[in-house]
Length: 264
Length: 263
Image 1 (tube, rainbow over the protein chains, first blue to last red):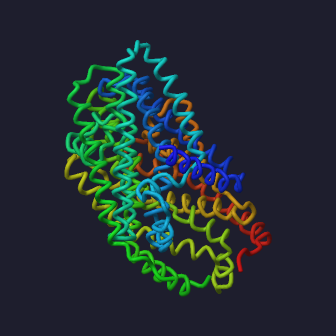
Image 2: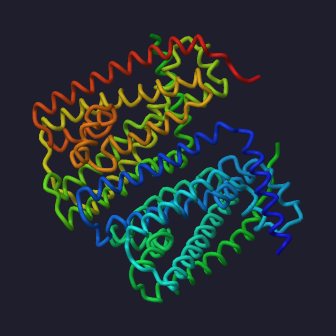
């Protein structure tokens, strides 16, 4: 365990050093974050300027949803996203053949490819999303029990596990077919998670709950907080997350056999 | 102007872009996603509350056409030209016996021809599922077409002018991002301009963004009075000429500033 912790700390430090060379990026990243956040909140304000509720969701509730959405995405951008991109992205190691060196490193491979690249600016996104979450929760004016808070955190962990598994599967697919940026496609679908999945038509809702489980990542954590959700949902979410994790790990290992390096 | 060279360039770019179809289609999916999200959001709102000036069919038609208009006017040179300048490959463009704007126009046209069939397929599929019923008059359709062409010219020129700023500043990305955000909020993507709160609405009517996306769609839906139509065209043509002069100015000043990078 200590060994893994030391490795993660090492990767994190290296990423910080790499990033510190480009100071200007700091300003640009802050700007992106602020614009992203501002347009999200303004979009909600424009919508709720016309109506009181959308499918029973009030403004504070939808704001909470936006905060959770941004939080989950910030966690993705912090480490899973950049690491997977370094593996299977457009200029990733599978494409360039630099994966040879990664294979030679004396550490568990799946662990290595999952945590080695950090995008430190995502910490700013993370903090801002937490601030919005606090503001939105304060506006909800609702007492949250310890049990609810615990379930909320638990469901966020599930969301992260699901997201990790899907991104690992997509990155592993680059061993089979290169050139189709499936992570782009997935990222496009994630955008639908900005709003409660209940507002979408039935076919899209099913797609967003089971195939591209955006619903499990954003809508369900909030529902745990604001209303009584049957334990079945949480149980099936747990099973889904564990199944996806198992599937992703096996698929990653199976995909490794396809790797044939690349000549220079 | 060297038109034959320009046409050749367009042909070459088209083949280059065709080769990466899958890639560009997934990009196009990302570009249409905000419109799709807000299509469903507003459909839900209108089925629950009813919004007086926009019916359910209006929302469907508005957002489905928004996907197409956005795809048609999307300026890819926004990002590519800046990259070319920074990498120093811009020198090769300058050596050709035709103005570099042809390179930008060529990839613009190629991108549109490659991504349009995909956007059309998605929109037709959604139209079959949602089945909007509507009537479009010849008048609204012809004003839509005219406004669409002007919108395309305006959006392309603004993107090109902003990208040319890379001739001075190493990174003009910040400005491009701000541009994109305003386009999302004030061009009619998050909501049709007519549904914005009054302050934002009057801001949207004065800024160029409405004339790149929302204005043609409002014409198509026949939501504007005659005086609003003339005012809209006046703003659109005004912005187009302003951006044209700005682009000439940036080009003339910038090109003397350019020093190639690379080895």
